[in-house]
Length: 403
Ligand code: TMP
Image (cartoon, rainbow, N blue to C red; front, side, top):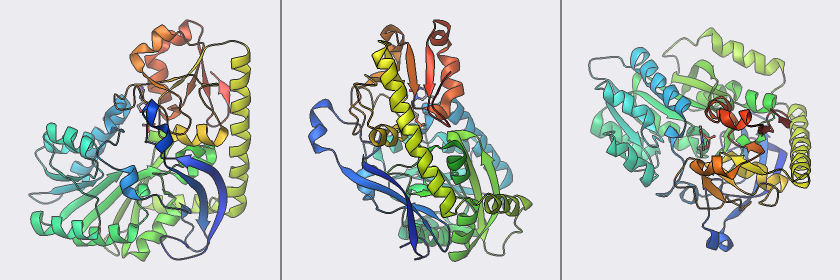
């Protein structure tokens, strides 16, 4: 049953037994790993793409959650620009108030704070929340939900903007989120969120965007229907080049604003390409299979020819690829990553060891599987000596190919 509207959900993709994508394990703790069955479907009524099973939120989001928003230079720039966009366009009145749901290490709110604007982050993961606090960002440690929205409104007054990046798609119980936002948002306020876009996932075959934390894959059509259901309206959309293709959705209270032409245009383009139709989604599932087999074939060839292979970027996304395709240390002996909380541990399920990025040069790789393909430009530029020395990058989005 659809988590948004109660409609019938038709399964189109079975990604098999999967671990928690951000649960990097200590080498002696692999016996305790949690697994679940990752299946994806689409709602016949509201066209929301969603998982069929839910992982309890406390298993995914806890004090040791390793992901930091600031892990890429480009993402830091993106969030600073986002803060300025929100400050310029949406922070009305003499004393504006901006709330961020899932504020992580405070990358976006630090820029709001620097502008001297009232703000609050709501973040359930203690480790990253403390990083934000150390930077002077005001953070409440909690999962945002209905009661939390009402409490913030009582304490701080209404918010002009509620923002969330790569967070709303993580939350199955969006009914409670919308009620919390209803309690918190000023009459003319906006709820702005950005998440991976179904249009990009289908176009790029980026099935690794689907993992435990990404419970929903949004489209303009499904977000429009969801907004209506909860008394809001989708009033603007903007495609973003970050994280492999996202959309920033702007919602206002129903009737409060006139939707921009971009909303109708994006919905029409989705309908024209049959984005949420089962035939499209089944064709996508067939591509997932083909690409996984191609990738394993390519990695086996590299191994058999004696070339030195490694992975680059121990992304959450890579859990889906490695566990679905069956890629382990025999094919990718290690992966390099800049995140201290991941280093020295094993990638979930696949048990590929994560090594500090600084050790990359001495490893002397011939081929690098770019798990962090969404940061390709930044990473390939940073590691230009690798290609200069004859090394080649192996990508699997949108196709398996060597660069
Ligand atoms: P993401 O795709 O979810 O943002 O995760 C990117 C991962 O890749 C994260 O663990 C940080 C890592 N990373 C590097 O190791 N080097 C880099 O240059 C960049 C941009 C990311």
